[in-house]
Length: 64
Image (tube, rainbow, N blue to C red; front, side, top):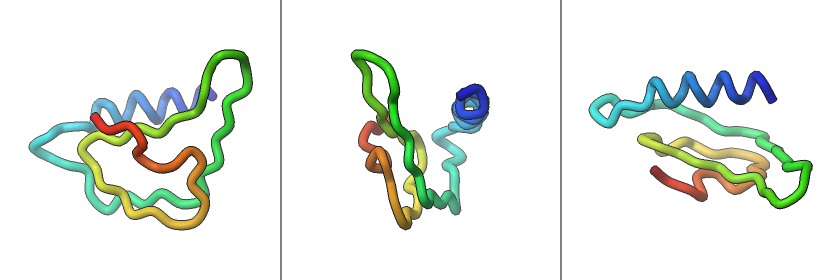
């Protein structure tokens, strides 16, 4: 969990509309939410990733 938060923070810093992320590949993603009253989601901003294999949750269901 801590590693994913660090990655999220890093990616948020990288997100510049004038410099979109390129050559991003998402493969074999299988995230599950454990706890009450929540769900797992995928959010993409300023990227159109190439997607292969399993994607749970579905890739880029939320776009910013």
